[in-house]
Length: 166
Image 1 (cartoon, rainbow, N blue to C red):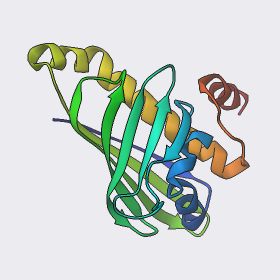
Image 2 (cartoon, rainbow, N blue to C red):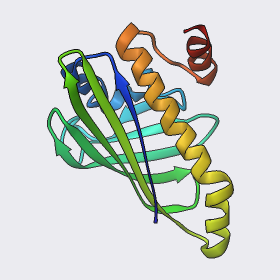
Image 3 (cartoon, rainbow, N blue to C red):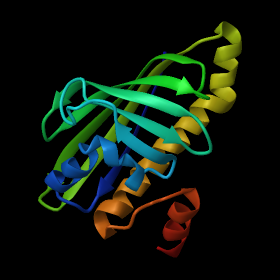
Image 4 (cartoon, rainbow, N blue to C red):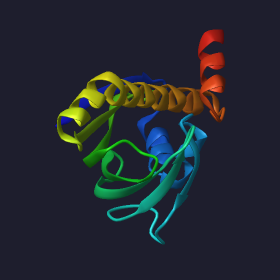
């Protein structure tokens, strides 16, 4: 099992951040590695709400809510659909913790197992885990910029241009 956690402090009230991250269909607005996202269920909040994320440069995943703690976080089961890494038992836990009325810490914990035995473990150490960690870091930085400025982060170049200018 591979597990890692990334976190960031955002100058935004917890409720505002909750509104952004709990709108599952709108992750494309702040995650530069998601080119398109949309619901696959009629329910858009709570357990069993699900979305498809089309990924940059290619690939597609299905994310389904398995645990929902209103205002505080949720757990997603992540199922690769196309052009995704050889993983299983893949999940992402989003947690929001209020620091003060205008500052919130958000953390994402990723858990997954590799397929392909020893080859999968080698791929994980050399390519997959570093790419996933970079992707989660970009997601969090995109969320910070989006929540603090309202700017939509359409791609990696946009994110890096904004970060470089800061």
